[in-house]
Amino acid sequence: MNRSLRARLVFSFSILVLMVFFLFALFLYLGIERIVIQRVDETLFDKARYLSTLVKVEEGRISFTLSKIDIGEFIGPAAKSYFILRLDTGEILYKSPSLGNKEFPLNQIPGVGKVSYFTIYENGSKKRVVNYHFAKEDELFKDLSFFLPVKKYGFLLQVGRDLRLESDIIKRFIFYLITLAILALLFMALLISKMVELSLSSIKKISYKVKLISEKNLSERVDPERVDVELKELAIAINDTFDRLKMAFERQKEFISYVSHELRTPISGIKLITEIALRKKRSQEDYIRYLRDIEKSVNHLSRLVNSILLLSRMDMGREHLKMEELSLLDIIRDALHIISPIAEEKNIKIEYNIENVRFIGDKDAFLEIFVNILDNAIKYNKEKGWVKISNKGFEVVIEDSGIGIPEKDLPHVFERFYRAEASRSRKTGGTGLGLSIAYELIKRQHGDIKIESRVGEGTKVIIILPQ
Image (cartoon, rainbow, N blue to C red):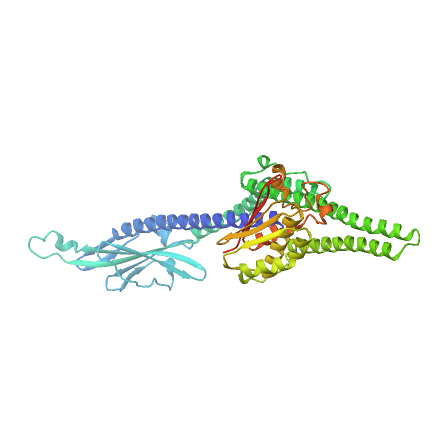
C-alpha cells in the first residue's frame, strides 16, 4: 500500500493543531463557566443578604414581608429566582411561590454570617443555590440590653436561581467555538499542506536529480547548497553513493575490457597455432610442438579464468573463508612444494628462515597468497637469482633479486590486470591478477600487505598476518 509522506505530515500536524485547540478551548470553557458561576454566586449572595434585612423579630414573633419589586422577581409566573426562609433548625418559615411544591435540599449549614453554594440538576436544567446563615435580635429586648440578656434567633436563607440563561450562553459559546475550530482546522490544514509542500520541495529537487542519473549518465549530482539544511547530509550521502556507484560501473567496464583483452590473447594464440598446424601435413614432432604451444595457451587461459572466478566470488561475497588456527611454517612449506618446480626450471634458489608462529586464518586463502607472491618473485627474477623468506613474529618478508618495479607503478600493483610493462605478463605467462587476489584475500582476513621495490635491485613484499 502506497503511503503519502505529505498526507501523513498534514494529518499529523492537523491532529497536533486540533489537540492544542481542544486544550485551549477546554481551558477557555472552564474559565468562562467559572466566571459565569462566580457572577451568579455574587448575585445570589447579594439577594440573600438583602432578603435577610426583610426578616423582623419582635416580642418573639417573626415577620417577613416582600416589597412590591421583590414580588415580581420571586412570585410572578416567569420568576427565575427562588428562596426558602428557614430557622437554623431546618424548619421552613416562608417559601417563594415560584418553587411550588419543591424544596431545596438542606445541605450542611454554614456558620453564622457565612455562606455555602451548591448546584441542583433536575429535568435537564441546573439551579444554583446559596445557603446564607444569619442571626436576628428580638426588637423588644434590644433597648433593654443593659438589663436583660439579648435574645437572638438563627435563620437560614436558601436563595436559588435557574441557570438556563447562563447554560444557553455557554452552549452558544461552545457552538461558536466548535464552528471556529472546524474553520480553523480547515484553514490550518490548507496552510500546513502548503508549508509541507514547500518543505518537501527540497526532496523533490533531490528526486528529480536522482531520476536524471542512469547508467549512461552518472555525472548528475545534487547540490547540497540548494536544499534545506536538514536535507544537506542526505544530499551529500546520495552524492557519495553515486560517486561510489560511478566508480563501480567504471571498474566493471574496465574489468570487462581487461578480461576481454586477456582472453583474446590465448584464444588468438590457440587459433593461430591451430591454423598453422592445419595448413599442410606435418611431421609428428611438429604436431607435438604445436600441441605443447596450445597446452601453454590453454594453461594460461585456465589460470586466467580461475583467477577471474575467484575475484568474482570475492566481490559477490560468495568466497567463504574457514577461519582456524594455522602454522606459518606449514603454510610456507606447502607453498614451496607447489612453487619449487618453477623455481628449479629458472635456476632460482629459494631460502627460508621462519620462526614458526600460529595465527587465525583460512588455510587455502593463505596458501593462495604465498603461492601468488612466490610465483611473481620467481617469474620476474633474474637467471640464477634468489628468493628469501623470513619473518619477525607476525610480519613475513619475501625478498627477491628480480628486475624490480618502477616507483611510479608501485601504487597500482594491486589493481586488477595492471602491468608495469605491457608485455611483462605475457612473456612470463602471468594473468596480472596474482597480486590483486593476494591483496583481496589478506584484507578480508584483517591482515595487510605492502610492497617495496627498486628497478634492477629486486622487490620486497611484507605480509602482516592477522592476530
